[in-house]
Amino acid sequence: MARDKNVTPAIPFIQLYDAGTQTFTNAGEFHTWDTISFKTSNFNYVSDDDRVIIKRDFYGYYEIIFECSFTKSGSGFGMATSQIYLNGVAVSGTKAVACSYDTGQGQAACACMTLHYVIYLKRNDYIQIKTTASVNSLLSGVETSRLLIRFVSMHGWNNEMGGKLESKGGVFR
Image 1: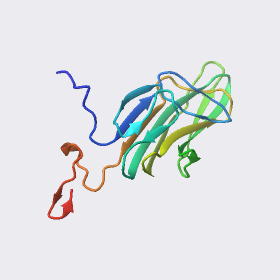
Image 2: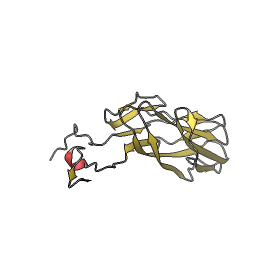
Image 3: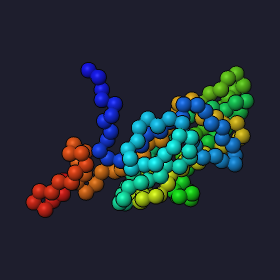
Image 4: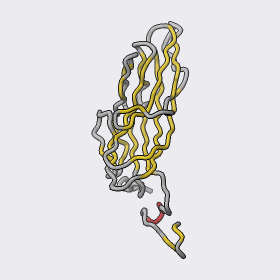
């Protein structure tokens, strides 16, 4: 049975990943993603950009999930600190830290970073992820940098009904 590739979620959703690697330094760089797995029309994103722009006409809460593994070239320890930025400003409470260590006999990623946060967004807000490295030679692992943003269903949002609100007896479901 073939799966219909044109089916998209009824709720706003975007999923991005980077098929290559990025280098991060102690100055800090914003992540970019070259592959759009899928996105609904509620988001504006162009491959290899660092901004995901919300294009919905009403406000709401969004769940943001960012994942990435890092490797370090050259022996020693390296630490990556990533944080969510909203409209170019760091969001308090959104930092995640991962470590990477190389014994001199080959690169090793000690940890996969996962940053998970719920944030209130409105039309034309944009999200960025910035990573700062403790050394100048941290690399993201191939296909490990992923960003997922989805609208948090509230006020009776029913995904099985294509996103329509349902009210019975004055109670939204």
